[in-house]
Amino acid sequence: MKVQTAKILYNKEAAPGYFRIGLSWKKPAIKAGQFVMLRVDTGGDYPLRLDPLLRRPLGVYRSIGAGVELLYQVVGKGTRILSEKTAGEFLSLLGPLGNGFPAPPKGKKVILVAGGMGIASLFMFAARLKGATLLFGARAKAETAVADDFKRLGLKIKISTQDGSVGKKGLVTELLKDEITDDSVVYACGPAGMLKAVSRICHSGGVTCRVSLERAMACGIGVCLGCAVKTNPHAGRSDNRVYQMICSDGPVFDAGDIDWDAF
Amino acid sequence: MTKSSLSVVIAGIAFKNPVFTASGTFGYGNEFKNYTDLNKLGAIVVKGLSLAPRQGNPGPRIVETPCGMLNAVGLQNVGVDAFIKEKLPFLKKLKTHTIANIFGETISDYVEVARRLDFAGGVAALEINISCPNVKKGGIVFGTDPNEAHKVVSAVRAATKLPIITKLSPNATDIKVMVRAVEDAGSDAVSLINTITGMVIDIAKRRPALATKTGGLSGPAIRPIAVRMVYEAATVAKTPIIGMGGIMNAQDALQFIMAGAAAVQVGTASFVDPDAAVKVVGGIEDYVTRNKTSVRGLIGAARG
Image 1: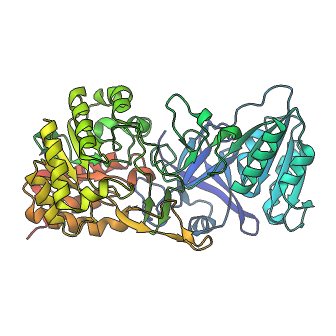
Image 2: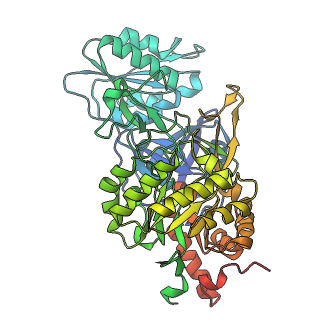
C-alpha cells in the first residue's frame, strides 16, 4: 500500500460548513471503522504545499461505486482548504488504516452512539447490522445532515441536539441511559467528553463498549508515536506498553482498556 | 550512471547512497516495509534506544505548526534488549545499513547500551543522541555543554569498536565548539540538527498545546537554520557531517550536501509520505546524472 493520488469526484456542502467529499479509489478493501490520512495537496510524487504540512485522519464514511465518500466539517486551515477544492482536482491519500470495528456478539442489542463528526466512522459498520439503534448527538441540526442515510439502512434512530433544533434537547448520553439494557453492546465515536460519559454508563451497567478514538497524528502508521492513548495496566499486551497508538493499535478500542482520567 | 556516483564513505562504512532515515521518524524500519523499498535506503537510523524500555510522555504529544510540527514523544522505545531480540533480525536481512541511535540518562547508561549493541552484531554504527529536548534528565545537558558531550562520547568510545556518529543539538550556543568537543572525544562523524525547542499555546484552553509544554520543532520550517548550522559545522569539522532538518525532497537534500554534508537524513517527510526518503535517493540520482557529477563531487560545493 502506497500513497495514492485520488481524484475528487464531488465535494458538496450538505449543511453549512459540513461536507461530503467523494474520492476515486479503485477497489478499496475497507473494513468498517478504518480511516485514511488525507493531504490537501495536489497528489503526485512530491508535496507542493508545505502548510499545512501533515495529513489529516478522516474516517471512511462509505464506499461509493467508483471510490469512497468521506465527511468533514470545516474547523481549521486544512479543512478550509479542503472545502475549496472542486471536482476534478486531486488529493493525496494514504490508507485504509487502523483496525476497524469487531463484529458484535450474537444475540446482543446493538447500540451505536455518535457525537458530531463521530457519525462518519459508524456508517459502514451500521450497514452490516440488523435491528440496531443509532443514538446521534450533535450541537445543532446542521451536524445531523447524514441522519437520513442511516434511516435508509433501516436503523432505529434517536437524535439529540444541544440547542434543541432537532430531536431531544440535551446530550446523547441521556438517550443512552434510556436505551441501554443488560444485553446491549455499545459502539461509540465522538468527542472525548462524550466517549468518557458513554464509557462510564456502559461500565456501570456491565455492558461491553467499543470506542473509536481520535487524536492529532502525523503519520497514521504507528511511527510518529504522536497519537498515544494511555491504557489501563490490564490492557497491556505482551509488551506491557502503557501507551497504545490510536492509529496502529486502534482506532477502535475496548472502552474498558482506556485510562479515561488521562484521556 | 554508475552506482558509485551516489556512494559515500563515512566513518569507514561505504553507503550506497547518502540518504538515511532520521531517528524517531522511521520506527525500527519494519513499520515501513509495505510502504517503501527499504533496500534502496543508504541507511536506516532506528528510533533512539535506551537501556530499559521507556513508555514516553503523556499526550498530546504532537501539534502542527506552520510548515512543521512540534513533538514531545519522550523517547518512547522498546529498550535495547528487545530491539536486539525482536527488531534487529528483520533489519539484518535488509540490503542497507542499520544505525542504532542510543541515549541514556547517565553516562553509564550510554556505555551499556553501546556494549550490548556491539556484542549483538548487525549494527553498522551508533548514533549517540546527546540532544533530545524532550526528556527532563540526561540528553539536553550533554547536548549543550561541550565538556559533558566530551565525557559521554569518550566513555562510549572506550566501550565499543563500532563507528560513532554524534547527533548534535541546535540548541547549543556554538555548534563549532560542540563539533570540536565530540571529535576530540573520538566521534567518527557528526549529525545535525536535532529538533529546535519550541512551544504552541492553545488559546482556547489558555495552556501550552503539548502536555510537556515544550517540544521539538521539525519539518521544512527549520530547514534554513539547519543548512546554516551544517555550513558552520563544516568550517571546523574534521570528520564527515550528516545533515538533516526539514528535508522534503532531493533539492532540499542537495542544499545540505553543498553546505558540507556527506550524507543526509530524512525525518518528518516520512510522516507525510512513507516513501519520501527513497524519492530523495531518486531525485539525487537524477541530479548527479544530469550534471555529470557525483555526490562526493558535490559535498561542500557551495563553500567559497
